[in-house]
Amino acid sequence: MARQQLQQTKPEKPKNPKRDPVASGERDATINRVASHNYFLSDNFEAGVQLRGTEVKSVRHGLANLKDAYGLIKDGELWLLNAHIGPYEHGNIYNHEPTRTRKLLVKKEEIRKLTGKLQQKGFTLIPTRMYFKSGRVKCELALAKGKQHWDKRETERRRTDEKEARTAIRERKART
Image 1: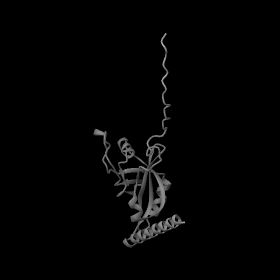
Image 2: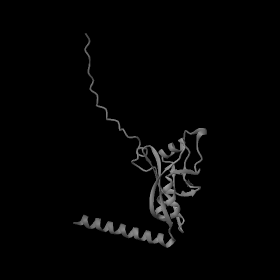
Image 3: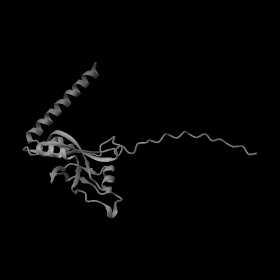
Image 4: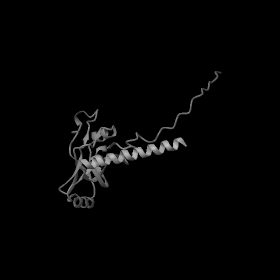
């Protein structure tokens, strides 16, 4: 009678039930960092984005860019223009145009509110970030008013002053 050998194995680590951090909503797919530098941002709101399959996969891979993008209300619908979503690597003939105009999905009452606010002089809609929520791509838009050159310098000056104050406090605490 042959003797069975029991081999000691390491217990397997439990698999992470979450997918990658972008798809699970833990991390933003893309952020428009230039928006807060070039504009005074006020009201934020969330909108769904009508995308094709290869576009969703490209956003998951981090190939989206909102730097030059803006929102526009046309014929009672909200549109996202100039948002660049790079072509999907394995998309072959079904790939999309990178900067095509995409429809934003919001309720009609929100569009009416935005129309009234956008008619004021100098206001525009700027996308600030794109992220996943319950498996769907969402875009956060902000009502924005453009900054003048001196406004940008003032913001930069204020930011450096705050940074210097924080480092001075940190150094003071380290000495004691």
